[in-house]
Figure 1 (spheres, rainbow, N blue to C red):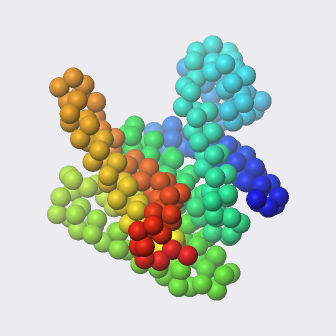
Figure 2 (tube, rainbow, N blue to C red; figure 1 turned 120 degrees about the vertical axis):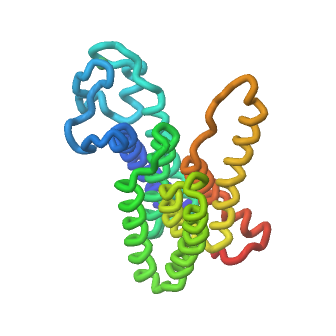
Figure 3 (cartoon, rainbow, N blue to C red; figure 1 turned 45 degrees about the vertical axis):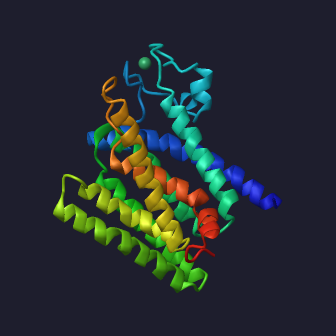
Length: 263
Ligand SMILES: [Zn+2]
């Protein structure tokens, strides 16, 4: 690997840690209709504001041994795991895709999906206030990248992929809103655009990976139904997981199966 790529990968990992920390705030506050800006983070148990030196991603949780400094109540390990997860996703994406303007669009998609997957799993909703800004930001970055690389065709393919995933889902939603909520329908615009940038084949991989995951977990759940009545994850969470899978292994799968259009 070139030294500059290593440096940017490390930088993007650190950026991911900070973004992950912000996403923890988003995941908690957005579904509860709280401001994501004010007030600053506080301990959910005792309400004591968290000082900046206790709010360093991952590190603070380790140094405080997963407990609040004032009340000593445990702080969920989910927070440092999300921070670490986004850091790894960002760094891995830099290594996987290299240095491009459109790498920012990949990060936007990943960050949005990390937040949405958790919110849907917990609250069974995909907030519009996250989905639309994510889509707008992806579109803006990809349009900029297409202009800079004089590659309007690539943007067009991505837009068509988004529409090709969106339209059948709209129809399913119209026929049976119970089976497929409009939150999921709205989300596939972002997934189609983000994966379509890598060619139609990668969108297929994302679609199949999402639904395969949902079916496998559903079947396993059904088989265990007698003993545990655990609810399967909501569909938006599977869409998010399948899309992350497709981002990283979609290209190789497309090449192996000789599906259309990966550059
Ligand atoms: Zn506390």
